[in-house]
Image (cartoon, rainbow, N blue to C red):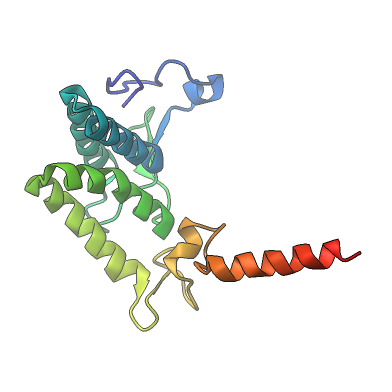
Length: 177
């Protein structure tokens, strides 16, 4: 959706000339917008935000969902009405962000019925059962990293205390001179 809540028939207003000439919707932006409207509803209780979140989620599934793979496409080209891009684990996780929060707020079983196949496809196509790690793309062979590496590169170790101790030691060492 555009910032004013309307469905884009071409590029939304207020964007760069490049984007105006190459109008695309992206899965991550769409999902984040759904999430933002859902959060706005959660914080204010204003029905208009909930309506926008629902419309955005419906549009996201109608536009980006690939029934053959069960995953989301990454981009939707507005000039050709074609969806495409890779099916990587990071985009899939972000793609579920908005609709999942909306489901959390509403408990809408119809929305859950659209979310569940994507979650199952992520598990079936991207998760390596032996390690619990997720491949970046379905066609990837070889070792995979935990999905946290793809979602949070800064803190992917998850061991904040250890990182803090390393930094303290470095700081102490630098200050000895």
